[in-house]
Length: 353
Length: 118
Image 1: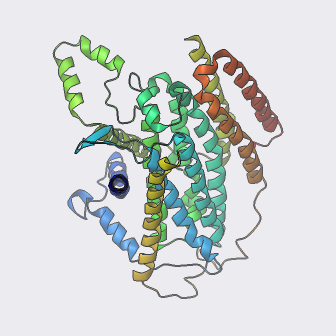
Image 2: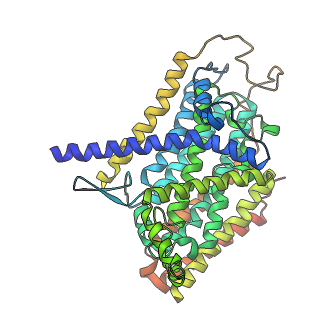
C-alpha cells in the first residue's frame, strides 16, 4: 500500500515539475523571440518592464488576465469555449512521453526522468497533435466570423497536408531504432546521433515542423494582411492567451521531439566520432571530454531545446512568407515524394550495410 | 501495459485543469461592459454582411480525402519500420511494392489536378 502511495506521489511530483518548467519556458520564449528579433533588426526589443524586459511576460499575462471576455453574437458558445481548451491541452499533452534526462537516484530509489514510457510513444505524439487541429477548426467555425472561418480552413488544410511528410520523415529513425518508444530511441543513439545517419530525414522533419507550428515561412494561417488574425480573430482575454501560449508550447514540443529523435535527446555530445576526434587532440581534448561529462543530462536536453527554439526565431527573422498555392504544392508535390524516397533509400542502405 | 498510461492521464488532467481554470478565473475577474457594437463579428469596421456560415471551395475537401488515404499509408509503414531489421530483403521488396502503388496513386491525383490551386 505504501509502495503504491510512493509511486503515485513520484508521478505527481514529476508531473508538477515538468509542468512548471514548461510554463516558465512558455512564458519566456515569447520574450526571447521579441528580444532576438529586436536585436536582429538592430533595435532593443522590450526593456521597460524589469531589467532588460525580464518581467514583461508577467505584465503581459496580468494584462490579458484582467481583460474583458467578448463572446460574439451568434457564436456557437459551447464550441467557442471548448476550442482554446482543446488546443492548449493537446499542445501540453505532447510532453508526457518525452524523456528529458537519465535515471536519477534519490534515497536509494531509481527514478527515470520521463513522465511516461509507452511503447507507442511516436504514435501517441501524432495522435495528440492531430487532435490539436480540432481546436483550430472549432475556433474558426464557432466564432461566426468570415476571417476566422477562412483562417481555420486554411490552417486545417495546411496542418493535415504537412502532417503526412512529418509522419513519414521520421520512419527512418524508427527503422534505425527498431522501436516507437521515445526512451528506446534515445538509448539507440548512444554511439551516434540519428542526425548523422538521417540528415535528409532531419531536414524534411524540420520543414514540416515549421509548417505544423505555422511558423514564418508557412504562417499563412494568421497572415495579418489577408485574414486579420486568422482563426483567433474573435478571441479575447485569457482565451486568446491560451491560443498564444499553445502556439509556443507547440514550438517547444516540436523542438523537444526533434531533439529526442535526431539530436540524441538528453545525451551529451560525446558520441563516438566526437570522442575519436577529441582523443586525437593532446591535453585540450581530454580536458574537453571531462568538462562535457560534468554537465548533467537535463541541462543538455534544455540547452538543445532552447537552441532549437532560437533557430525557429532566427528563421522568422530571415524568411518571407509563402503563397498559399506554393505552400500546398510544396507539401504534396515535393515533400511527400521526397519522404518516400528517403524511406526507400534508408531501407536499401540498411540492407546493404 | 495499461499502467504505463496512468502518468499520461495525470498529465492530461493537469493540463485540462490549467486551461479550464485560467479561462474560468479570468472570466470572473475580467470587466464586463457589453454594447451591441462590441458584440458584432469583426469585419474591418463595417457592419457584417450575411452569415459567416458560408460555403467554401471544394478543394479543401479533396485535400482532406487525400490526407486520409496517405495517412493510412503512413500508419501501415510504422509497424513495418519497427521490425524492419528482422524482415531484411523480404520486407524491403514487400514495402517497395506497397510504396510504389501509393506513389502511382499520388501521380494519378496529381495528373487529375487534385493538387493544383488556382
